[in-house]
Image (tube, rainbow, N blue to C red; front, side, top):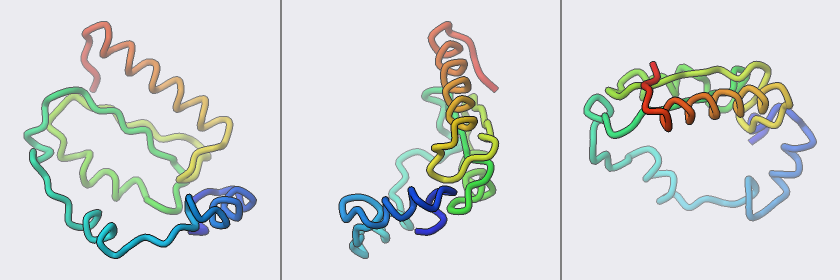
Amino acid sequence: MKALANNADLVKLLISDKRASGISAPISFLHTMLNPKIAVEPEQFRNCPFLLVHPADDRWTDVSLSRIFYDRLGCDKELHLLDGTGHFPIEEKGLAQMEEHCLKFLCKVVDGGTSN
């Protein structure tokens, strides 16, 4: 849990909250995360474009793990790394980048354009 955010004070706050990161998860929850039931394989997914904004300094989930799924997607897709942000991206620069990427992506989708 210490890698959840790059801000030590935030991590302490989250871990102390028994309704957030301080909660105990049942083993069945972990099992479903590790053994998902996939209705459509990523290569066959073409329902909508996909945006992945990933923290560049994520000590919880390295971007290489997210890319395993992302790279398989058959739809139009975009990947943007958020500079200087951790898994729980609260850093001002990363939040501004995330907002920018999300708005640009949504404008492309609304305008009928495609994203790559």
